[in-house]
Length: 86
Image 1 (cartoon, rainbow, N blue to C red):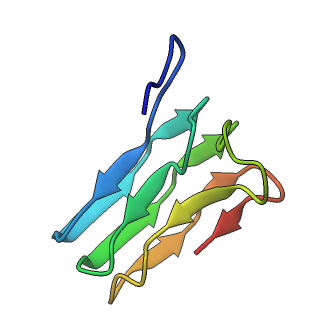
Image 2 (image 1 turned 90 degrees about the horizontal axis):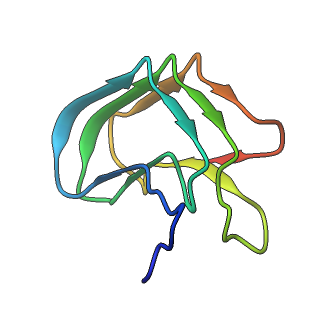
């Protein structure tokens, strides 16, 4: 995929564990701020600011998609109204 001049992606986690994502500002991204696959475990996403995400999404926009990662926590994030957290 060509991202173009202002293309940006968030954090993508694949098959990892014991990860903390905290105190970040995510904005102007084409997709989610944080995405993990089902092979991840113990992901903590706390205290982040997320706005202007999913620029290429035509339907509902997702801020965080942990893909079924086991033992994960999503708390105390400031997320633009209407964004989905999975």
